[in-house]
Amino acid sequence: MALLILFGFVAGAGTALSPCVLPVLPIALSAGATGGRRRPLGIVVGLALSFTFATVALVYVISALGLPDDLLRKLAIAVLLAFGITLMVPPLAARVEATMSRFAGRAGIAGGGGDGFWSGTAVGASLGLVYAPCAGPILAGVITVSASQPFTAGRFAVALSYGIGSAVVLYFLMLGGRRITAPLARRGVGLQIAMGAVMVVVALAMWRNYDIKFQSRIASSLPSILVNPTESIEDTASAKSALDGIRGGSGQGFEATSASTSQKPSGRASDLPDLGEAPEFVDTQRWFNTPGGKPLSLRSLRGRVVLVDFWTYSCINCLRTLPYLRAWDSSYRKDGLTIVGVHSPEFSFEKDAGNVEEAIETNGIEYPVVQDNDAATWFAYRNQYWPAEYFVDARGHVRYTHFGEGEYEEKEQVIRELLAEAGDSVKKRRSKARGVSASAGVTTPETYLGVDRAERFVNPAISPGTHDFGDPATPPLNEFAYRGRWKIAHESATSEGGSLELGFGARRVYLVLGSPGQARKMRVLIDGKPIPPGLAGSDVHEGFVEVTGQRLYSLVDLPRVGKHLLTLEPEAGVMGYAFTFG
Image (cartoon, rainbow, N blue to C red; front, side, top):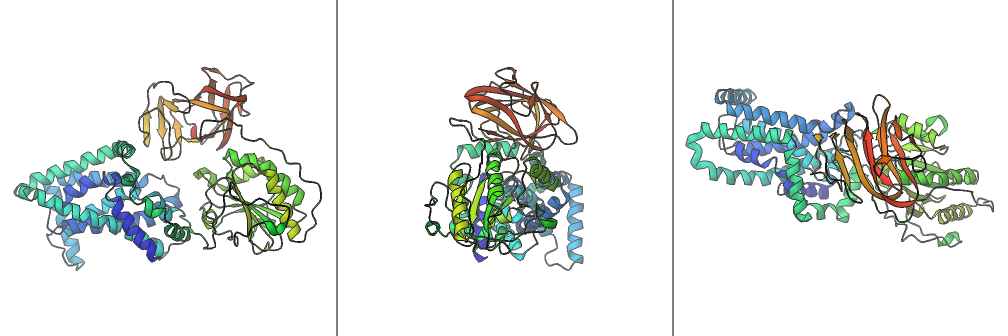
């Protein structure tokens, strides 16, 4: 824990020196330059405390109530705007300052006089809300990965140390700012109004997402070490190990080998390596296909061979492995094999138990499946992939791993060897598993529509909010273009009458779609013409897709890999998440 606290402090200080601080810096400098001598101290105290509160308490509340992910940002903008307007009206600012001073005096708090400490604390509190989204991806994952996990002092300490690290750097920046503006002190009222105007301008700029656009432009032209100075710290083995623990891991994790380096079975069970004891299923939610919906544990499965499969139902790579998993379950369950599908969702809608249950039924899955909504079991295994398979022997030790599709004959051989090692009789005939494999020669990588992972778009920097993208040029191969009006969120994009074009090199095209509240249609064109039945995916009928549930839809199915232009014209309200290709 001491390592994580130190990591949080250093990461916070590093973030205060990165482009992420740009929305906060002008406010801190302007607010710190006015008021009493202890105002900068109040600002950093308020920032550290409110950042900690925002990343721990508010995140839990927002997740529990199902509120929008950008609520903190909107709240921060509102608070900044209110403070800016207050500073621009001197009588109102004086009244607010007096009220805060009286409150401090009644509370018996030292320093509650006219030194500006408490007004600075209020400004710092608003900055903490703005600063919360700046937390590095790993630190943010530490604090927010599971809103359902119980509160711990460890999470609080890491968040607080991060806030303090940032506050210390900002404090020294503000002291420098005060020295520069000290000669202007005799014009204090005018300076206060000007600083209030700065706050209002920055709040309005954030409302229009100009801060994100500017940060993206800066980040794209800077070395990664300047954009994310804490990256090297986050990637250290010791930090990762500690982070795994606080994320909800059991501490039993092991360094799994990739498919390219895993030892292959040789026909003798003793040749399979022992990769360590398999972590338990931890902090899971609903179980499916078990008696009475009761949870399983690896301890209760001792004596059986267990195949732990990490998957999510909108992942095409996962779906292509299901025929093999079903065949192995059918062929070897009576011989001593138990398959457990650990459903670790990629998108928020995949956390819904009803959606998962429907996917299990649709795909004919009869083996046990458990929801891993908070990725606690995922982190316990130190997993990084969908799909990922861990083969556990009868003693509870991992003996073989494989990430991604393929190598199905080798994996079935592993099952047979582990069953034989456990003393189970294995039939001579192998399973008759058949499935669809990814095509060779695919050039277009998986692409996300939400702002968090949007790449290869010809449009200017993608940012949250509603945009009219106009009519950009036709995208080249492996690139995408929004046309018309779209509402862009962190993990999705919702059509408001717009269309989407992509140049792809693949045989098959899939898109994760949803249509909240009602069924909506989406027109599909290829190379500028309505897609004919011979080239359409299984979800396309007469050139249209009817979007109902939130799932993966098959749009294109060509005879062979080719290079084409795909145009999608969804009705307003259709939501898109991610393209995959095969």
